[in-house]
Image (tube, rainbow, N blue to C red):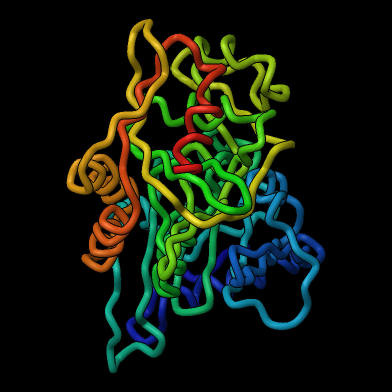
Length: 344
């Protein structure tokens, strides 16, 4: 079954992709609907068959809802391996990693943001309240795609709704929590996962959603990626790994199944920093320092967010206090240290 060979001058990419999705749904024998919510925003997933269901929904399972009515965002999804339907651009390997097509009088509904991931062989397109996601094969998705599915589509769309996806973790309780900001390897995951089993709920270790006025954090994924050393240190707190035999360069992937928090007010930004030996403690720092730990990695990992995102991060860092969180050898004390921050 062949789809359109190329995007015509007078059609949008998402229009062509949706036609291929309809072919895939017919080939798969129907559509599977799955719905979740972030804060008060509803997202509807419409899968053409089962090919991508597990790959996409494992990390989002804690956000699943049973609401009815139109979703704020509808994403149509299919894979070629299970349906036999390709993406409708034969030269997609020549597409840039991401691009935005501005509105044009020649093309209706052409304000599209496109994310192409050649290594994973997947492609997503967002236009307003509609999106399409295609992958060559759901079964072959790498562990990091399973840990943060639909990341770029969601961060673009949430940005259009005054929420910002940031590269960071978050833990907290109903009356308040903290954002854990820093580059990969700084200790965000160790700090977040050490709170499992405490009174602090886990909202994420790598990507979370931030809202403003007042600042709040919302969970996006219930996944955690942990290297071998920290997997052993945190073994008593973690469920079984979703990839029990990771490749040498891969981290172990976990889907957290207890102690989850969907959202809470933000009371502080913590900057984890691994320290050999010593005790876990906090040291006050400046809003500028917090911004330099939060903004660069967010902008690097999430392209196309614009200057408004940098402004949002700056306002957040100026609104709540910031602390360096020195992580010593006593990771069991991390929850109590964070609780002391929240009680200030």
